[in-house]
Length: 339
Image (tube, rainbow, N blue to C red; front, top):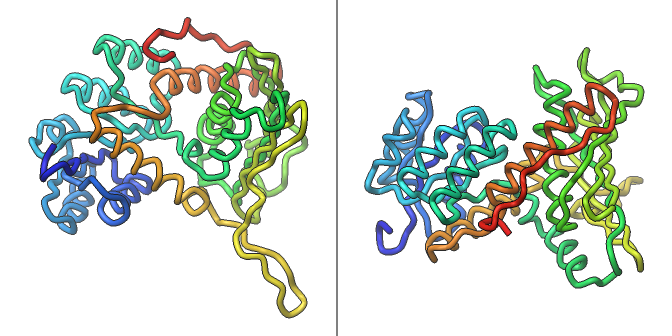
């Protein structure tokens, strides 16, 4: 490693998420530094690099990976660019934190998985940050300990104040429900085997052509049923919650809105405006854990298998959304590397 055990990270993609990771590595976490920033926008990365000592700007990911100061890669570029960047990282045997999606579809995710298998060891952690949120971690611990007995169902809520221009019905699955897909698999330690999507009367706040809200139903291999209310133009803020229904009780997270006040005839708390604010600590913890594991020569967290499985469930979800039918999820047998 460079600089006495400090991990030199190349951040590839410096849009909203990538720029936030640059700030996080430079100002928040320990054990790493931003050694390179990469983006097709040369002016943007030149400006970013100029603010960080020892950071070099690149427009080509492969060139950044060849920089001797780069020990690891954080990929925050658009999903369609991930496969090529991941394969370049594998060719150099570099550790990777890859923002979701691993790739935009199951076929390309499977190619990445097979390429990592060919290395004989894991190199990728996929950025499903909810696994690092305090509430979700507590719920996972309760389920693992069997505190309330065997889990039977999950109820999820996922609400956004509004959607950006061009947001589509498919993106409701691929960009939003993908998080519920991953936490369902993780919390229950169970694969999703089928998807249905119900589309009630849409809100008048939704852009034309967007069916919002939607109710997404998952079936799992272990016989569990999971529902997710997805409402991405609710108008009032960002809310995420999950309730586990178990044989001996229930447990719910996501109701904590911070300070609860009583003043001048009003009472209540705050609702965060977006996912960055809601999951800021989770993002910090995710990147810090990745850095520490990498410095130890280890890989932890969501794997290429998790990225591939999420992509396969998303594809089934998009088909279910379009047809109104129950759509089975097709997965290969899970390789030994990811068991």
